[in-house]
Amino acid sequence: MRPPRIGIFLRGDRLTVVALTGRDRLTHVVVEAAEDPAATLAGELRSRGLGGGRLRVGLDRRVAVVKALELPPAAGGDLARMVGFDLERHVPFPPEQTRFDWLELPGRAEEPRRALVVAAEARAVERPLALVAGAKRQPAAVTVACHALIALLPRALPSRRTVWAHRHDGVADLLFLDGRTLLTSRQVGAADPAELGREIRRSLPVVRWSGADLVWLSGPSRDDAQAWRDDLAVALDVPATAPPFAAFALPLVAALPEDDPGAGLLALAVAAESRSPALNLLPAAARPWAPSRGQLVTAALVAVVALLGLSVALVHVVRKERYLGRVTEEIRRLEPEAKAVDVPSPFTTAWATGAPPST
Image (cartoon, rainbow, N blue to C red):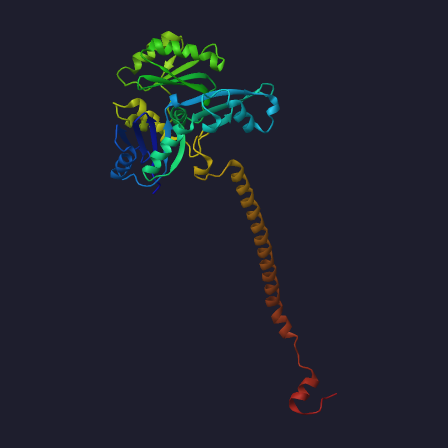
């Protein structure tokens, strides 16, 4: 059986854990104010039969710096070095204490190249790694939890300027999406829909939008979700709906406990995220090995060449066997005729009887 996929949303001293134990089944655990969080986490997982499998950790958005950097055309192929150099101007901690990852954003050929960068202070990454090690487990990834929400969406979405506002713990994580592509994120106060609407409007210039096409709202309890969406739609003058979760995610979202919808959804998203998330703060040496796209292509080409070689050899053997079969059949066909014309000569008869050959 496959090991469970376990996601942890880490906010302060509170751990929200979701383990995917089956197609439509999940286990939800909360560890809060524990004297030894690692030992408590290990005990909770063990008591629920969640042994084995790496742990995926999602950080609170407030501990990370998320920036969309515009890079000069001279960056060329050495984009990683340019991102590292330019990032120093945007983070409030020394470069040697910075852990970051990045991905290039899609754009037109005539536009400057842009990269979305996620950075955090080293201790913000080392703390969850120490927690995982203390629980006698290995890490699979360390990401910003709200970024993992995209894993719960369908793979194909129309290209629309969408703001996903996810409420939890008195704040809202804002994701700015073009279709399914993450452009940037923020964490803002969310005391009421009016405040949330103001913060969304204030954030639009960051992604160079004059407005959004759609707002998704998640996180509030089912009792007040529709009221928030109605008020938010009025405040922003755009439709406000629930996120269009993928078919696989719908029963999992419904299975989350009603008293923890915000943090629970973040932990679920972290558990459901890819084995190799695009923005991963886990040091490269600690990441589980996963073949890259280039390696997969190379392996596929090697397999095709090997298959072709085997096919050529097999065809050669089949042809040779068919040829030998035809020769054998021809010999069998001619054998009676050869025996019919095999008449003994006089010299052969004389030699056998000792009499002189007749002339």
